[in-house]
Length: 500
Image (cartoon, rainbow, N blue to C red):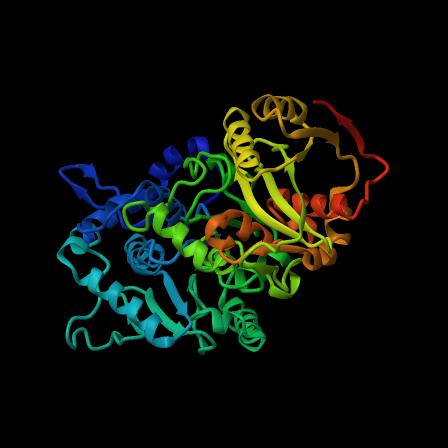
């Protein structure tokens, strides 16, 4: 494709090179350009439901098809159209652009890969496809007899190109591959959690897939994530990846780099150009609503973070992997009721406020929680209401980044509560990691806490020992702070200030 182009002029550049991607054809002296991938998809699949995220997904697939992107990895929740785009429409589109391309589709089983192959063949046979790409034909019936057409392999008549499908660990001996599409190499969580299957998958990828490739070969990996050490996870740890947030990020992708995009079922980070959703918005509200996704999160937060949010965690690497003890009814010997609040440090951090009760043995029972990314003018009232309804007598509020003003506002709303603000200067990582065992030993949560506070539950139960790999520290910081206070352990750098 020549010299690397900036994304700002890529569309203009693409229009200039597209005529050479297929044989030029003239009608009435007008050069016919191939359709965009989105136009192609709507032509051959007029029933296709295209959401805003599909438009950006298809734009990426078009850049991949035309060689602008050589190595692309996409993680997407189940039932959101990833395979329709990557393993059904894309191979047909690429064979239309270049009938000499040799494309291979791989999946966890040969039967699934062959299903994709048959769908591609049906598209190529369609009238709509023939009008768009008349030079890309496959044999019909037994003719032409010299060309191959089976469930797992089909050849383009009059050209060197074709499509091969193979199951994971299948053989590709002797086949040149210009483009690999690897779609869900693990059937389910049981397979992905098997070290033996993961190792076999990696060995197959390095000894089969990579050995069939040449200098200009392209790779597309499209997964629902199952495990931190699945193929995407291993490749991310060994090769450079550029996470796509803005379209200008394409300019940062080197020839041997991966471009990576993770489309979360529920948006968690700040809006960006490629994914402009607000925090909490569902990826496809009409198909899987926020309400439905939240119910799935409550059912199994750890699995939800993996499959739907694209953030798998190793069970052995979880800080609170043993799980928290729970209670049904508070004991009678409660000696005090208190609260610990950490206001949000950064724009997308959570305010975490936990009200709790302590029995005569020093066991800590969580009774109520405010865990929110709403602005302070909202959370001030939420925290004040929680303190009042739970008969809390003392509340400690970290003063970092606006905590003093928050504490003063809460104090005005609940004058009978003794509010104190303090600055936490001790190292957060050291505090959280060193107190984790004590937190598990001393703290009890209500039996239904996963349903009552699903985000808090998810962030604690998926919190990793590798501190830097955690997206949010707010919940872990607060449970650590509660234990420190109740153990009368006040680090030397903490300065307490009380006001009434």
